[in-house]
Image (spheres, rainbow, N blue to C red):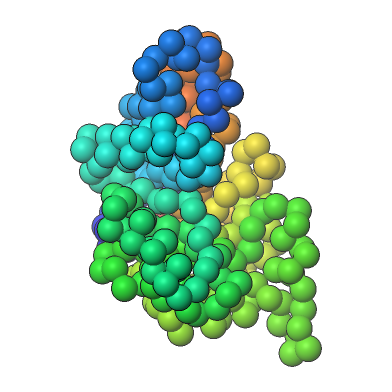
Length: 277
């Protein structure tokens, strides 16, 4: 999917919502445990309920890998289901891979040769040779971790070097030598709202994948105000707030209502693009 395709999808849906499929079998409604594949049944219902209101899905691979072969099968089935029924959706493998050499090449193959994903999250700590193997696939995206929303991000990402630059700033600047805004995005946590304006000066045209809105306390309004560019440039992820909006047999209806609520708010902010023209 090209950058323009994604932008057009955002305009069509009036949404830049990404639904995180961080499906925990211990949290899904109990009645689904009678299904042959409870995780797939839950995800299928969530996708059907939220597809009208979002432009992307982001399965977190850890939730599936931790369930062994059955979890892998559930993951493959839901990705195939989205591809078959909602081909316009942007699908992100939230894998946070970060190794070098042949290992990185194998990780890239796993995601793009054997998976039906548009993008993968990658950790940049080991440098260019940990990222480049993911960039050889035409039409596929790398989403590089830049400034995350967790408390521990301060341990390294916000540390300042002798040259006065923070580590996340170095990541943003150096990585632009590896790929442009048609193939690379960045993860920037919503709880770093005070940094968005500065980040946009470094990467004015790139898309940002933004977790941390909702359950983690980030402000969607501030993310949009300081992070949006002329092509929107944002994919804001919501996981728990949508997935577990209800724990009864009406969980899908509750998920749809929450996704629609977020979409309606996003539609307001997308009107700002018209005012800028």
